[in-house]
Image (cartoon, rainbow, N blue to C red; front, side, top):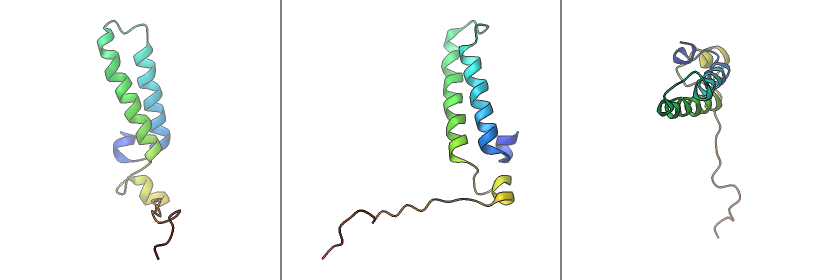
Length: 80
């Protein structure tokens, strides 16, 4: 629910990723075919944790949205 609302996104994304990884490697999971679903969900949760909150999230309203502007002209030689 925290991830859907966008509250504590990096923390909750990390916790969800750890939980899904634990389920994937758990010895109590009999069918090994289900392991790939949990690995995919863990990778997805890690990516959400690294990207951070979206524009409409509670985190963005409370702490402000942080954007990275990539300057694509840096490192190029100026045209004559």
